[in-house]
Length: 254
Image (cartoon, rainbow, N blue to C red):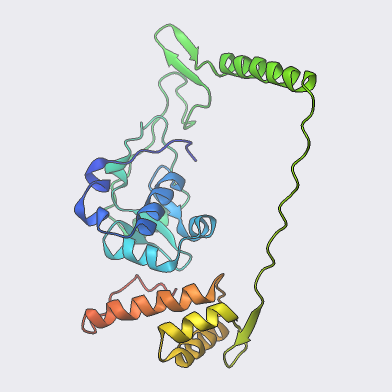
């Protein structure tokens, strides 16, 4: 995977993008950074790494920024070619290329071609950049020497200076005890979480049972059950505001 990606202001400065919550905007940027050269990314792993929730991905899908390709949340960034223009002699085909073309037959993909310097289809070069005068190195060794010299100076200065007294470590706060609720005893809420649920939702018992039954049936688990109940409540509110007009998410069950 490439170490650098770009984003177009035509996409990220649009009203449709800026009207989304910051969490959905952040997920879009992380998906773009982790995408391969065809704009395909495994959204589930990115969401786990960044702490994003399912509603953030749903909103990106509803706004047309992302298309989910299968049940494992392998996703395609719709404006990929607007954000990134990859040279054909550096392009590496996605391992999900066949899946992408099956779901989106008209997807605009760059076809890789042999490099002019070697004549081989080797994909992205590592460190060398070729000019008319031959290979030209980017100067990583030079930067490394400067940093190494700076490190040595700092190291010697620390060794010659008297060692300061170590600060007293701050004791960690104990985690609140979470109790089990629901028919299947799989909804975990602390006393404070339970107070918030009861204060925010008159039908709190039904919402806990709904989450308990869903996790028991699907085998899924959530890191924060209070946050999940709130997210489901916001989703229900949006569906009610849409007057029952449900949206399709490509058959993906979150």
